[in-house]
Length: 412
Image 1 (spheres, rainbow, N blue to C red):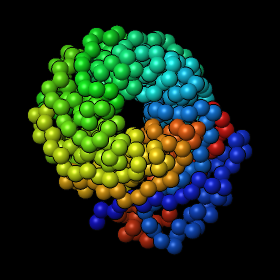
Image 2 (cartoon, rainbow, N blue to C red):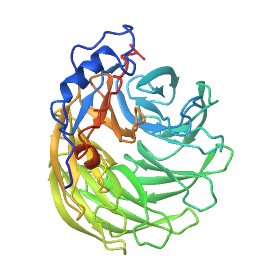
Image 3 (cartoon, rainbow, N blue to C red):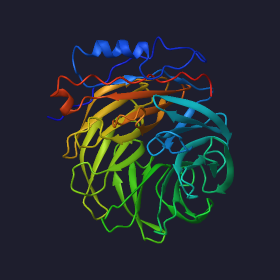
Image 4 (spheres, rainbow, N blue to C red):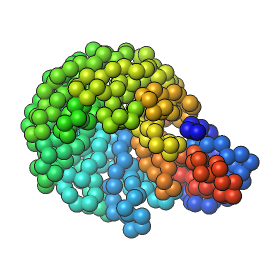
């Protein structure tokens, strides 16, 4: 039986800024554990909000500092702050997030990604500065200090980025969608933490998000770019040397925004899912392995879906999705069927026009949790995965898991 993730929680009765941290095994969490023993229904639990002094837009998860404990698996979070031209970094702890710094970048930062392009063992950050037509490179020393080390000019209105090794030299590169320039900029990583813009590829009107994958199963990375005003997705074929050529456009629904990739039907090919901002659904596109895709379903979600996260929420071996919905200020949780179809099974309320969303095993229990940037809510929500596995459902003597609630760390 494939169990679907259920969600519960309300962001209330939370401590105010500076009122401390709830760690693992706190009295309040113990009370939640006691209430749960009556019935093992799968669920996600809200942690308290992280209050934020700015309006977070994009969000990424990475290994941003060296952790003394659980360093191999602990991950951290960074968000871009659209209105105050900065990014904020919070490091992960077992059951908590701790804000450590804010770093100035270019004007109106939107997309943000993490990657170890300097081969230091810790990830740096790349930020698309929408109003500055540039990408900021922010590196850390592994101990919590971060600084902007480079600014690279790209096309007009950069919005989103994807990081991967596009030329097969073992060094991470970047691809940037330029909304106002109707193009994609390719930034080649040099291996010392710097980048150079090597090419620009024309795409459709107002390209929004971008994703990398192998669309023809030849072992070479390709790109897919959402064109917001053309209501389609441009497919860019990778040559293996870091250059790309547009080979196809795939029609989707109204005003698409985000795009993600995964094997939705288990056939070994990389498929696509697209968030359509004004038809309030996801277009699920299954790959034919030749740069073409076939539409399988439109999965309804909340109003104005913004960003998508991919993960196996109920640990059944089938990929699921989660989507932030700006106009309804919630997160849609969709269960994958394994045949390319998805069904919304729950909505989780968050605050104020959520945008960025990331996957992180926040409490190191082997279950993927979610972290959400609430743009107008000026906060970051943590959603803890409390879904029961088949083994736990069939083994009554297993004690329900106890997890710490997330700290309210005050203003970043």
